[in-house]
Amino acid sequence: MFSFEEEADFVQDREDLLGVLRMRFGSVPPKVIDHIYELSDLDTLERLILVAANAPSFEIFLEEMNEGSGSFRIVGERFNPIENMMRGDE
Image 1: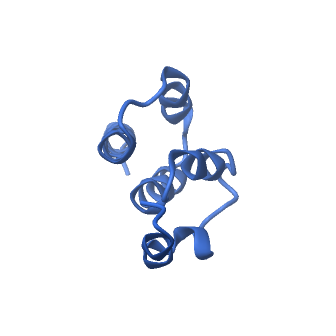
Image 2: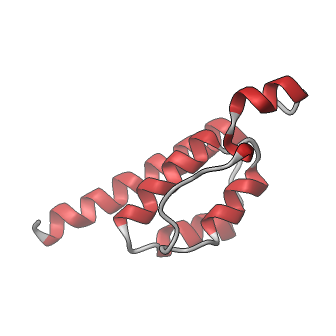
Image 3: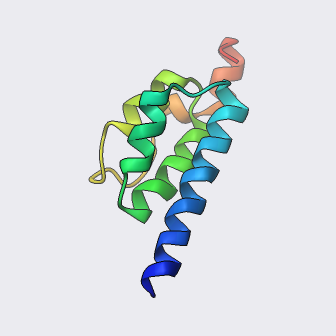
């Protein structure tokens, strides 16, 4: 991939991630925005977009964001939206 195409992908993924976070959780702290713009791995950005769309709370998103690039999937009951609705977490 050409360098400018790759950079365009990074910009789009970062903006998509921030958009999902804002839709789900409201305003995003500047420190989190800075962290997102420091990410340099497309796979990590794409994973975080999925996390942002599925995490039941902003705190869980932050935990996943701090896992780094070594984490590659989201699993477990804390990402089960049906379970969370049954308990009244939403």
